[in-house]
Amino acid sequence: MVEFGDLISAVGEFCLYQKLLVLLLSLPLLITPFQMVGQVFMVVDVPHYCNTDWIRAVGPNLTEEEQLNLTLPRGADGEYDQCSMYSPVDWDLDSIRAYGLNATEKCSSGWVYPTAQQPSLLTEFDLVCDRKDLGDISQSLSMVGLLVGAMIVGPLSDRIGRRPVLLISMLGQSLFGLVLAFLPNFTLYVVFRCIMSTAASGILITTLPLATEWVGVSYRPAAVLISHCFLAAGQLLLAGLSYGIRNWRLLQIAGSAPMFALFFYFWVLPESARWLVTRGKIEEAKKYLKKAAAINKRTIPPELLDQLKCEARTKSGSILDLLRKKHLLKVTLIMACAWFVDGLVYYGLSLNVTGFGLDIYLTQFAFGVVELPGRICCIYMLRWFGRKKVQAVLLLVAGLMCLIIVGIPEDQAVAITVLAVVGKFAASASFSTSYVYSAELFPTVIRQSGVGLCSMAARVAGIVAPLIRLLEQYHHAIPMSVYGGATVLGGLLCFLLPETSRIELPDDTETDNHEKRNKLQTLPKTDSEEKEMNSENKV
Image (cartoon, rainbow, N blue to C red; front, top):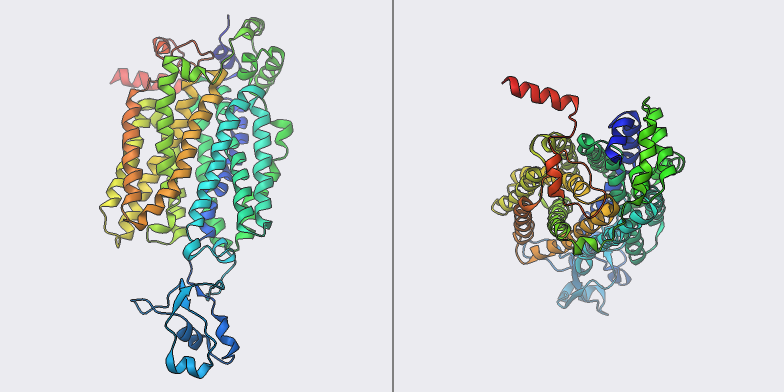
């Protein structure tokens, strides 16, 4: 019986067809970071105070400064209070000036934003004072959408295929992302953003199996991480867009509309041939394999295609296998934990871009710049050190950076930002490693279900991360301590996972990945690996 890896070797492990496929899968990821964390730049805090136009009825000729001085209390620092006002009275202007106002109340007629600026979510929907936490809460609710997507997309992709789920997700993200720009109130904004996030989750999850199931063993990390480099480039694009477009509605359109340019995917995006084989769709799988071989200028031996018929009986799997089978249960629990702390530290740092003391656009740009080498370095680190060590060490570094930040004085903005950037480097690299590692640990028949389940853990972390930030009102060190401590613990747990470097992808749920280790030395090496081995032997 032919192994599917033999067919990939015949087609070409990472030739023109696979490179074009990786490019196709990468383009949507340029836009995804905007949909996930772009709201941070729509709720930047600005000076504001209560609307006290009631006094204009008795003093229409008052200057703005006189109006504020008569109607707003001052804080201990001498500045006008931003969230309270003197209670309106039925006095004439002379009496108000003579006796002054004493009773205060919360803003009852809205707020005024004196600085000239473009409309933002904060100013248009008054996300200030008692409504200030709504920004973080809405970010958490959008992460609920990512969680729902992870719950739905994984099993659905294993059932109906990778291609249709990805196409539907792309359409949903672009359509609902565009609708967000035209909504009249904040409640509708939160609801539609949650739906849009569900589609974004589908893109993140479904690109993974298509990238890994079409390439050879040695090229799996490169296929996944090249696409993740586009995520890093999307972070840079987010910094540029948000800096250049301050009107939140125009920014939302600019971050959503480009996805419609990818409508041609309907005709060119292939299905996973490996998935088709596991579902018994042999003829369709052969069609894709022959097309890939033709583009790569290769020829598949007829006897290999004939033997492919035997693969049609691959036993199907269920998401319950992840809980019933001992080796899969261990992998699932630890990888879910790894994804959870990945999401916690990644979103904890990303969403706190306004809290490090430097210009938020500069900080976001630094975050994007450092993500790119983080994703690229992963390709080489995974090749040199394997999956387990890289996953564990990166999580430990990200967690330690957060813990060190706790001990830095708040006025040391540059030092804090540098540590945060290092933490973001490790967190982004760790996230990429998790995608590669998960795709290799779970068998084909439930790969999407397994990755989706782990992704759910990351989305729960995404929901929790903004809420943890609210704890800083009790002590500024609490959020970073939680992010750092949990991440260090998750990194230590990863040392319990099996290694999957240069091991063929499992197709059914019966095979323990530990058994695959015995084949480690028998797999063909790439030319680059042969050169490395020869140079080491000479030394």
